[in-house]
Length: 221
Image (cartoon, rainbow, N blue to C red; front, side, top):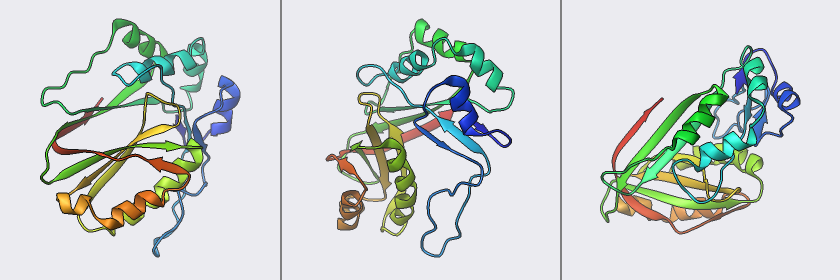
């Protein structure tokens, strides 16, 4: 949820739920690096992440619906002053992936009254470039890690061959993420500079990556 006029603290008060991450208008957006000016939030923000069971198409939906069950009327009231959306990320190593959403999952998400924005990454294994690496990352504190990751992401721009990065909360464990990075070649992905960057991520354990070549990427509601 985000708002230009109302605080994230108000969302916490109304719902009675502590967010996974929140910020207020005027809070810094990360830290200034390499001479770049400090950026500040122009909207308040309130985020919650929840999942149930192993990795799968609907686990994030079902976990979120369970966390907000019985609060649909409160969300409707908050919607008068806040923009709301649900983010869903999918990743498959099949050339013809399928994502399965049960009627129950769709019904419970529809009851929340939020638009769903999806990002699906379709990848296929290879040993050549361009390369996509997917790391499982385990952290101690999600809020602190996400704040620091926003800062650390800037330094990736200085590594040769870097082509992009995304971070998604994993459905299979409460303090886990899927970190996806893209590289122009296999040699770039295997650089010592990137290995050092992973080792320097604060309070995080970064597993050995899965390696793919990206076939296509689609995004939309």
